[in-house]
Amino acid sequence: TGRIVYELASGIVCSPQRILALTFSVSAARKIRNQAVEALKATRSKLGISSTNRVLASNYHGFARLLLSHYGTMIGLTLNQQREFEMHDERDLLNLIREEETELPSASILAISGLQESIKECNHAGTRELTPAYNEAIIRLGVEKGWMTYNGLITLAIKLLTDYPRLAEYLRRSFPSIMLDEAQDTNVLHLEF
Image 1 (tube, rainbow, N blue to C red):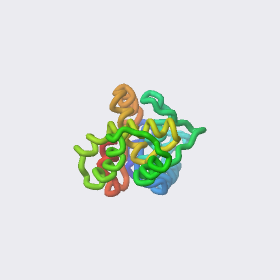
Image 2 (image 1 turned 120 degrees about the vertical axis):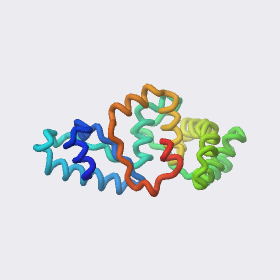
Image 3 (image 1 turned 90 degrees about the vertical axis):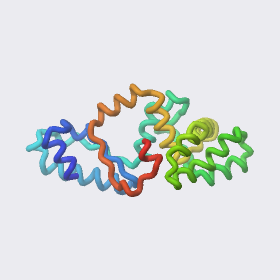
């Protein structure tokens, strides 16, 4: 939070709303948000900001979900606040696909099973190679079955920002300051995001 106050005081950023703080866990995001509010309350008159301006602090998955809830239709996904996806890890998702006899191309099945391994091995090239088939499967399962994976939130957000560079540019301009917390807990997918 000291960095947040510093960036505002030095004029690097003109409003707390233009700061995005990303972290690995929900609890860490909540802690950053609460600390930022307290720090800004203590210094807001010196900084010339109102108390309603807030830093956007989120975990990676929450921010990806926010992007997809607003812009997911651009990549064929319907994700909104009224419809909650059933969240699964890749192993559970593969079991559900088998149990419900959901038909998917073999490349999609291989991508679902291989992506997590590629992430664990810090294999950037392998992760990028598997992502298109993985996304195809996740979009289909999300639309047809209401299933989603945590990795799917990130890969689809990456797809959204890659396919729509004007949206990526809009976000870069909206958040000229992005702070990463808990960097030791990030993986190749988070770094790509």
